[in-house]
Image (cartoon, rainbow, N blue to C red; front, top):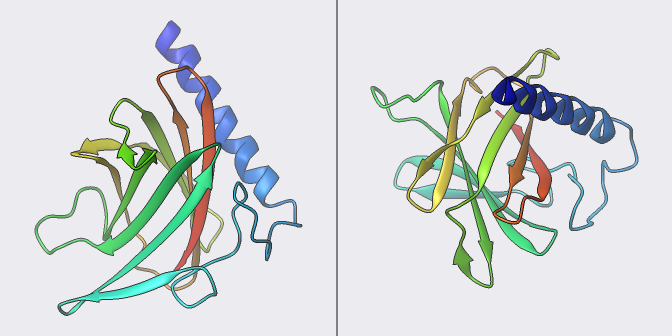
Length: 159
């Protein structure tokens, strides 16, 4: 019963998070806590080449935590839930936090959304999503730190 209530509370929080981001005034701001519109080709996103592989990486400051967002195409045969790996690292004072619980949500260009719990991969948390279709994807996170507080952030990614 507790797990069901916790899951319901989290999903409700994600829905409210999406609604608050869709409300408007955040689109081109550069505040630390809001989700400024950024993509591979906008002002805040960073596109890097690692061999022949293109990656997206962006950092945000959220409630005193440094959050790194990393999106890259999954290697053939190594897909973990989709065409792309959505990876997130939460740090405080330069040290990765490994005791966070995180859920992720993607709103696809067609308006459909899906949520997944992020799995731990060393210092990173990861969820796989199909981001191969053209258009702008809104990727959001909600994470809970050891002190019991919840924090949210996100980025836009354009394929």
